[in-house]
Image 1: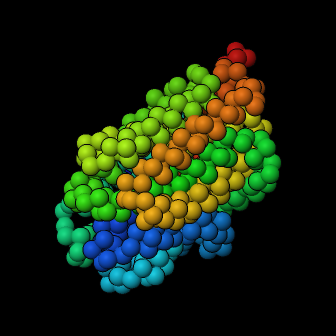
Image 2 (image 1 turned 60 degrees about the horizontal axis):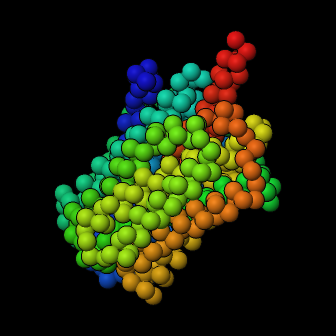
Length: 421
């Protein structure tokens, strides 16, 4: 671990500052939108726009990198992020924020792809899993810290928008001055959706439903907090509790997934997260219960993303794993785009507390579908033959997912070699 940290500290430091900026802007826009008088549905459009840009960039950014190089793409996209963050409080119109969120979603995805390419190039077979873990911890830690920066300034002013802009600008220095250019890469052509769904219906359905859950956590949670009358500090604690529990449970879930039927674990986590969400819907008005619901949902839903990928890999040939991951990213992106729009309509039609009804409904639907799938197909892979779990975040780009696939390959090779010996 120390070897990975010593060789990649500059890259991880840059990513840490980038993620503070990204984690701060989602919560901050939810708070500022309330002050500007944006409706719940308008805010849902704003939050959905981020994932539109992110999904497009996952396909377009690799082409840009091949054409002009990693460094130029990183600098150009990072500069655009910094500029958009400054423009948010200047152009306080829903249409302007929607355009800004599309741009920021596109740029952050491109920046992640670039930095993850550097990380993958610097990692070896021996330390790739540790590098991926450090990368995930860095991202989650930054998002958690970002929630507490919200209380340091006035949401109605400019300072809180300047802070992430400055951090994004400063993140260039450690990355661009220390990393070396990596060779141009080719992205893997995804499997057809028909074949992907046939191979693992549960993983595909899970990716679609989780996309909506993740979008609700990342952007709409602050909108919910403002609508039910929570203070800025209360909202920051609520949002941070989602990611604290997500980080804490990644590795226990990973340990369990390598030792039991993964479908059963998927069902347990889904039903647990759904039940936790419904507590705040059925018993509204209790702040401590909101924190419990946020923590349970975050802890259950975030590890599910990596768990679904690992489960699908159990049914895929090694040559198809990277291609399948691209398809899963697309399915998850569609769910993330639709999620805030559906949630905004539900919150407007029912009440703000329906936020938990939507999140809980998504997770319970996944659990029920998993139960049904267990009656349709028996497990074909013994627990001892399953691929290893690799921690990965729902915000993963194609490069990060393929990096996780390399971890699966390395673990499989080590197990095969150990069996021979």
